[in-house]
Length: 241
Image (cartoon, rainbow, N blue to C red; front, side, top):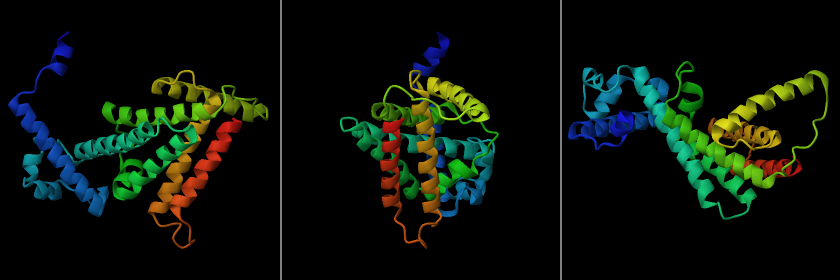
């Protein structure tokens, strides 16, 4: 089909040069984010970093917001790749070790790029739909998390405790999580596994976010040790799920 031909045909020299220029702009802009954060980014500062005038940048990005979208995509892709790589490298080991590798890879990337991390989760525009490649990168890392938890948790989800509105809310969440699991490529994941995957994500994210802003410093707490303890707790929860 024509669309497939467009995707597979070799790039022209002009297209290659444009892609190289876009990649350079994104890289320089990310380096500026590392220094001043996303809120301090301007087309003027990016243009100065790459040797372009702001009007010249408009040939590549229609606005500052369009450039920020590209930076969010690049950040999600880089974070997702780091997590997926860690999961793959630990694939032959015990599932609890693989879970630890995933969690520590997430933390490691965030600590290496704290302002990029803030851009992804507090600075991106909520009305913007992330491009497919960024969604795909994060989805792959989430799929690695779900499959790892599946290897730890028993097949049966176990009975729900409670009733009334609490049980109704749980059923609604499970339906939403089932759709999420389907989108990841894990249609057979048990509701308990998907709930634990979501819980793992927001617990690791919350811990890392607090560490980045120095919340543990005055408490004399070590972030890496806290994360290791959290992973141990998650493994025990998965085994009981």
